[in-house]
Image 1 (tube, rainbow, N blue to C red):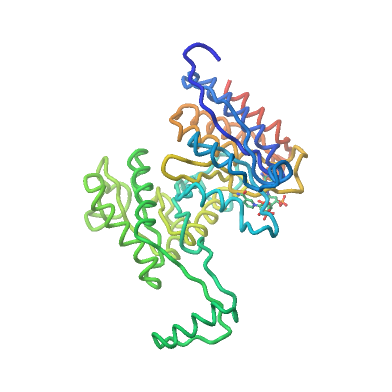
Image 2 (cartoon, rainbow, N blue to C red):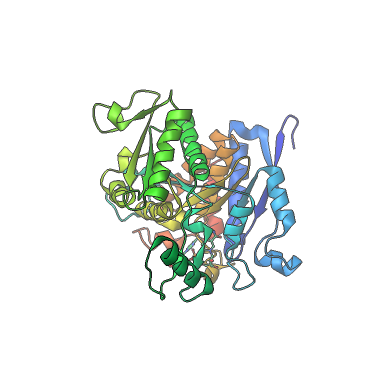
Length: 394
Ligand code: NAP
């Protein structure tokens, strides 16, 4: 380390399957990005922390407490994908990490990178960041099998107390949506929009049918905007027309769309949207549909953000058949790393990573998953793709 350099500790979980391959390519790219920009005053001290199969093999625990402690202490971490253990009482390690650290906002930026094949004609028109509530709604997993004691008990209770008739072969799920969780998610989306100069925050909901959960999410979102962001927000009724050009300089338009309409709006009017805030289930559908529009999950980065702690990870899973073969596409993890640099305040290094990835892809340097969809025909390995990105950062 040179004099005056700031060192920050970043815990990383390589992950299972292809995780180790894509993590080593990513770490090299992020180091090179910091070195190549004025953010060179900063250096990452990488510390490996355990989760998943490696953790279970070494400690007997899928998610050791030390791992969560190290992430809390650093306030940040980057992780590869983890296998969901079969049995063992853990629904999903990823869900456990999000719940234990209260990472309440799932953040998924979606934009097109030149050179990436897409199913639509003008993929570059979509450039949105999706804020999805990460702790409640269907993520709570409150469900009972048909015929179970709980399901039958609830059916009886609903009939006896409120005259609601359900047949006994009904499975039951609950969809809790609270004011506090909805507001903190919308607050995070609005803070992001204001900070980054993104002109629109759209509340996405199915409030026409689910009035007291989805509809309430929308109402609480507007209420929060009026109460806490009064000076910087405008609403559709305030504007003379539709379209970003009508939004006054320095203001954020807060509007809402019903979820099914939103799924067509991102296809028919993609350039009218910039930040989408949604409850859990709608946000889930929307994030994957948007990712598909710009080239698929293989390159989609993500972050799970709470108050003072954030974990960055690709959207895809462990793709076990490619593990250790130098085949997997590291783009999604590299771009998740770029998000992490931005979160840490290294905007220049973050932008440099994005530019270098785009430059490699538009030069036709691609791993086989993308190359097979283009005319390029030729593909490179995980390591070589990482080197191509690093070379472009020099
Ligand atoms: P997956 O691992 O994402 O893989 C599905 C397919 O997507 C792969 O067979 C491969 O397609 C392609 N793929 C995904 N990532 C790729 C990459 N980086 N480079 C190239 N191709 C890639 O999904 P899955 O098979 O449903 O899940 C496998 C395991 O991952 C499960 O244990 C699941 O629980 C876990 N998972 C973890 C996370 C997470 O940690 N956040 C997320 C999702 C799933 P082709 O076969 O077409 O080549």
